[in-house]
Length: 108
View 1: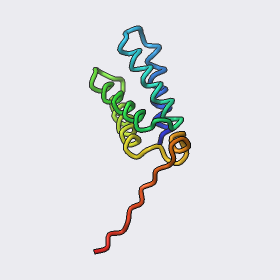
View 2: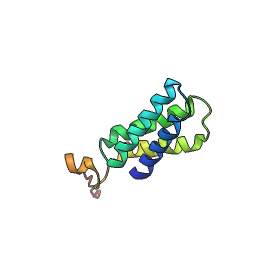
View 3: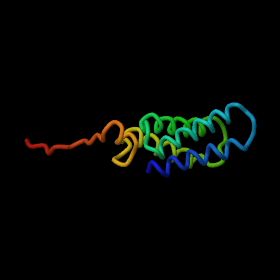
């Protein structure tokens, strides 16, 4: 899931860089590429997932995107990655240790 969201964010950034010189588009493109690279690597996943979610919502709210549903999907995946975490195969797990949540059975 990290790889798909990261590649999609990088693709969005690369296609937006070639569209024109407005500074807003350049900032969104650079932020999207940076967040995509961080997601693919699994580094600072909560921060980069939140950034991808914010950029997806920003793209939908700021005008007429070519495909708003793709931005909504990307924002949803980014938010879920920010909440769930990077997983075992990531730089976050290597550097900071992999956090695992154990759910115990309720006995009443």
